[in-house]
Amino acid sequence: MKAQYIKEDKLLILEITEEIDHHSCEKIKKRADYEIQVHIPKKVIFDFSNVNFMDSSGIGMIIGRYKLVSMFGGKTSLINVKPAIKKVFEMSGILKLIPIEKTEEIGGTKFEKCI
Amino acid sequence: MKNVYENEMKLEFSSKSTNESFARIAVAAFASQLDPKLEEIADIKTAVSEAVTNCIIHGYENKEGIIKIECRLFANSIEIEISDNGKGIEDIEKAKEPLYTSKSDLERSGMGFTIMESFMDEMKVESVLGVGTKVTMKKMIKESNVIEENEIKI
Image 1 (cartoon, chains in turn green, orange):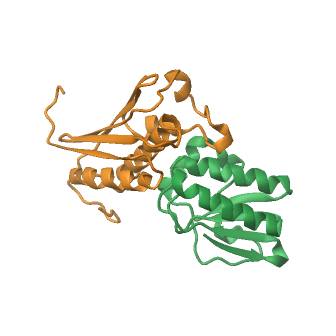
Image 2 (cartoon, rainbow over the protein chains, first blue to last red):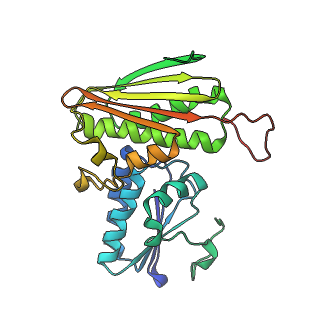
């Protein structure tokens, strides 16, 4: 996972760079929780550009991070989610809480990729 | 089996979480003989990952064990059986309920069976307490003679 913190926006971008399953979740959780607790961001964006697979373990993992970010008063969203992964998220209904954003909507920072 | 299958394979591996990706990739590679669409392959991989994860977390509760996968290919469908010799499921109907999880402390979403049911065309769960659990799933692979643009095959 790659982490990028944009201080002026209090924005933390966490780019997941592997397939998300029960096995990889533990590592992703640890790193994400560390970054969130170090920066206390106003907003966390999970970038899924490089995620080609996710099973339901990913739903639990994202909800867990959403809870942590919310505890500090921050918001969580997702970008660059591929159709097969969106299908898994849609089953769970969590996109109401943790929306998929279009990249150009994210204020302050420009992104090359777009959903 | 009522129908004669055209090809079959069997796999046995340790209940280690590193094998989750091995299992779904192996089944997807076998299924690719039927020329499935990218979306059908993604559905199969997700369902296999859910079933194997269940064996590891629930069946064996992260202890040593053997997970078995049997796949059969028919003319236009694949049947996948995933089984463990773990602790078994006490109440299958409850386990299948969306969002129900017996392991909420592990941040499990409780969506495993719901995903298997909706991503595959058929799903059956058989379980005996103390003996093990077997999940049987079937996915229809629609024949496509025309190769659509942007379609990538494995």
